[in-house]
Length: 110
Ligand SMILES: [Zn+2]
Image (tube, rainbow, N blue to C red; front, side):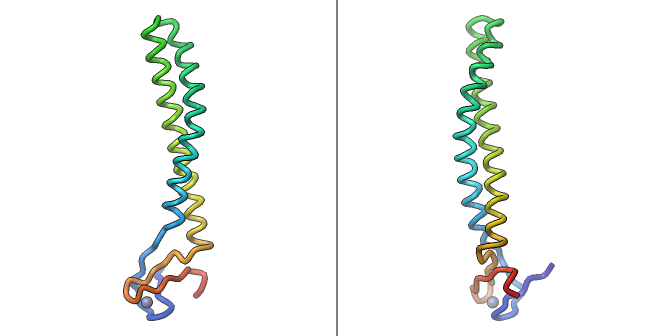
């Protein structure tokens, strides 16, 4: 696939990926927030499981459960946000920038 600038026909084209960056950031934040809820549940579950190991087991189980919940939430949200942002980039925004004349354009215009 070769993309050309519609203005100067240069083949030196870069992508902006603004939507992807914003989507990834927002998705990570939303995912981490959702992950915090999961973390609280994970901490409870971990603590419940850790009861077998006494107070130390409860603390470790709680921490492990919280970490796993928060991380999974952040990762899942970030990936979902990035793919959503990529969709916006490709279909709504002018995601391509000519590196020669600076003209912004989207692929569907040509
Ligand atoms: Zn150009």
